[in-house]
Every structure is written in structure tokens, then in C-alpha cells.
Length: 92
Image (tube, rainbow, N blue to C red; front, side, top):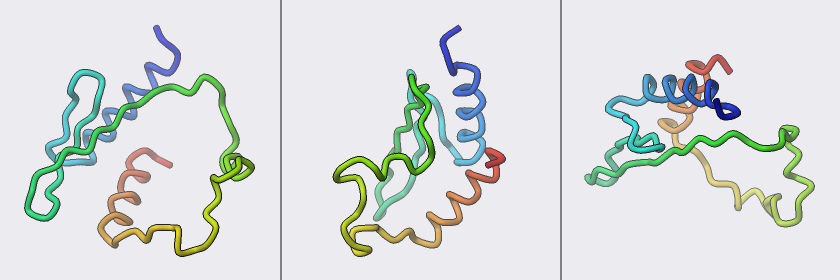
């Protein structure tokens, strides 16, 4: 069994439970969403990292830190709710 395959299966199941009409296609998770009156599909592909890193460790990389607060996109209330729901369903 490949490294992380059990964890990926559990996370895939949780994502599919969180988003109505989501489904798997090949090795992707597809999440259908209406945007500006058109149906779009958000693709998610889960891979297991070869090397674990510390949360926030990316800030040491050149160019990875926004230069000003205006570079950070604001989340909509719906995006905040969906993110909170996803984190709660993953017990994170």
C-alpha cells in the first residue's frame, strides 16, 4: 500500500460528504459549483508529501510572503463558512 493512501481515502470521503454533488473522477475529486450562472468544477488532487514540514515554514522562502496586506485576497462569508465546515468535518 502506498504511503498516505489510507489517509487520502479518509480525507476524500470527508470532502465528498462536505460538498453536495461532489464526486471522484480518475484520481481527482470534483466539486461542482455555480459561478456567475455557469457550472464550474473545482478539482482536488491529494498527494502524500515525501517530507513533512512545519506549519508556517514556507515564510522563510524568498517571494512566499506577501509584500503588503493588499496582496492577501479576502474570503467571502460563504468561503469562510465552507472552510469552517470542512475543517470541522475533518476534525481539525
